Image 1 (cartoon, helix red, strand yellow):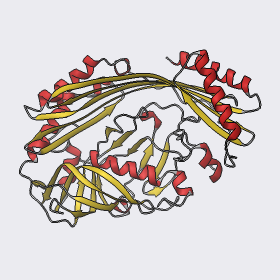
Image 2 (cartoon, rainbow, N blue to C red):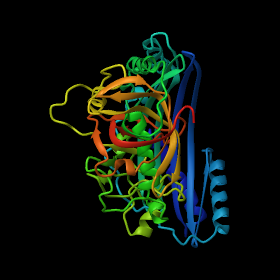
Image 3 (cartoon, helix red, strand yellow):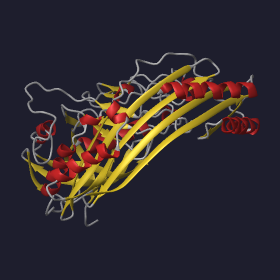
Image 4 (cartoon, rainbow, N blue to C red):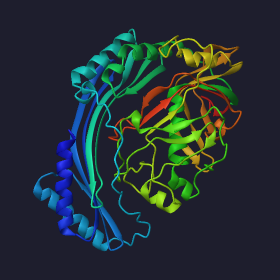
Length: 462
């Protein structure tokens, strides 16, 4: 698939070089085929699909930088894009922080792309949805099944030339019973990995177990966060903490080299999770350990932040310098425990076997399925406020005893993971989808977490 994109990128670079031989030029071609099957009231109500080739040109000339994009691939369209970018760079402000173009460098081995995921049909997505709905046992269901296939190429006037390809599949669905919702989510690069029946059964079991929820007074409680909730914590850590742009601007809590987290915490951004080969600047993506056994180890850099810090770019540019380098394939490593038993499949009405092992160690606390509508109050401490969602239960003496109504919380995500605050990490990590509509489609990989304290600041009554 990359041959067409590479030839188009080379043709666009050749034309741009002819327009300004003295300029530094980079060209990116992205071919995204995205499809979404949505369902509500236990029936599919929408199928949408995009098949878009996007062209991006960035030019640095006489100390100024400008960029432009287009979806026209004909000769006239290419020339219009080039003329527009060169007109813009002539009047752009001086760019004192220009880091230069990515030098020639190879990417890692090409990702293995699942043909079934890359070429997924509406019928294939509908089959997953049908299995989800049937497994819910008559409960009202809603959600989506999403498939995506990306192929692209990047070239620049410094000689860098790379290509890449990946496929993504994800499911996000709820089951509802008398106002109680249960959720199940999963993501993969392989269509066969997503079992709608398993996910539908999990969502339905949670909904049934959430009936007749009671209110509990807000306070600080010990918690077990399921992977669906942990994903929001990981996003906050990466976007607001381990982003080199945030550190450079003193908006981050991260202090490299300090043991800021419990020794059980190792956080890794691994492009192999999604098959990303290079970033928006053409820098090869590489595995980056952000937290190693509790110690803040690395930051995610684009070329601009790396140049300012005297570091190497890590392949995390998203094409927007104001954002810096952003991690989009982050995993919290699970922790093996001798003598533990069970599997990663649904092992009970609420949680998988690994999360059940964490619940069993809680004297009195709260099991949280999901964190929702979260907003950062102070990025320097990563203080976040938000709501619980899709199932909350009281734990007593190692057992889930009754469902609870939702809470508001105000909690520093960084503080929740400090040394001694992490009482357990699950043995299985679950791949979870990011944003529903983004072509970038982040991927979070998370186990369950047992934390010593979580600050619930309000309940259903306020």
